[in-house]
Amino acid sequence: MSNKVVLAYSGGLDTSVSIRWLKEKYNLDVIVLNVDVGNVADPSAIRQKALDIGAVKALVVDAKEPFVNHFIFPALQADAIYEGQYPLATALARPLMAKLLVDAAVKEKASAVAHGCTGKGNDQVRFDVSINALAPDLKIIAPAREWGMTREETINYAQRYGIPVPITVKSPYSIDENLWGRSIECGALEDPWVESPADVFTWTKSPADAPDKPGYVEIGFEQGIPISLDGEKMEGVSLIQRLNQLAGEHGVGRIDLLENRLVGIKSREIYEAPAAVVLLQAHQALEALTLSKSQLRFKQKVAVEYADLIYNGLWFSSLHQDLFAYVKSTQRYVTGTVRVKLFKGSCQVVGRKSPKSLYSHGLATYDKGDVFDQSASPGFIHIWGLPVRTQTQAQGIIDLEEKKGKGK
Ligand code: ARG
Picture 1 (cartoon, protein in one colour):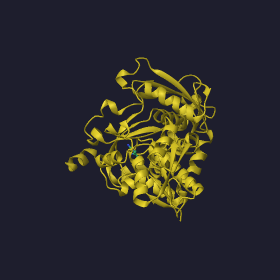
Picture 2: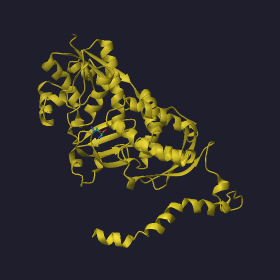
Picture 3: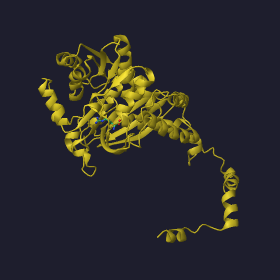
Picture 4: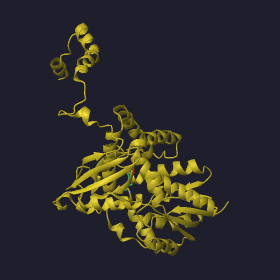
């Protein structure tokens, strides 16, 4: 059995303290793995910090491209949004980190992997379920779930061992960031009645301070994947970065959600997800143009399942594989352009077009060129209304007024 552990390392307080704690408690040699999913400003500084604290090796992986193409875009094609609002930024990054942790553990011949999650959140579930699915024999250690230290005690521990305490620790918030969004909790946000203070937001302008002139952006999609902004072809990573900037400037993408964690706790979370909000809305608008009514109805049900399985840590499940096959099939004609208006915190679709559009001007128009056969409607309505007519004749008309009275 090797005495090596690969620790998912963000450079923050908990994972920094974990380097030392894993050595003390389990006498393990700690190899850290920093995964850049669009949240790392200076990878070499993070590497050096880990080595200074006592890691035997520090690995850095730029995972932005696979994160976008294998995690974000499939979720976008699925319209995956948790509890009606959360685009799942944090949740989507965890299975990728788990996969990279497992790969590193195999390569480094480590007997264990570790992550900085506490025992109260969803992230521990996402890490553990994914790691177990990929490498059932790998031991998992979650120091922050085991050590039982408060925030204060963790800071003291860091100071005792000369572990630099990042200035961000002074911030009362717990923050997780990647390309698809920023998740913020704790501090004043723990009172769900309190409006989030201005200092919570760093990606989005306050709508009040946003430009007085609306911004417009045209997003080109091919089979449900965004491929261009304003006609300029772009790779996924830069497209999302650019859109985060642009929509954030107009105050778009702020979300205040009281959500249901998998572990049974209700928690209040603030999200900033400018690109995600715009792309999800634009994608749905293009689907409205290119999918039939029944395809849309069914896909909306799948979207709820899809979001739940991402949130609940089941990325590597067969159910996911099956649902993705369905989602992929639905996207074959979701190609075209959506025009979005960004204005003081709001994002509105104001135009859509597609070479595979199901919209027929001839059928819809009330002007010249109408091709709809109105004489066929009475026959259709006669049969459509048949069961209602039959029932009211046999059983009478439902008295809505009486129902209301009884309820009181
Ligand atoms: N509630 C979100 C989720 O479960 C975000 C969790 C991480 N948030 C944070 N501020 N650390 O995906």
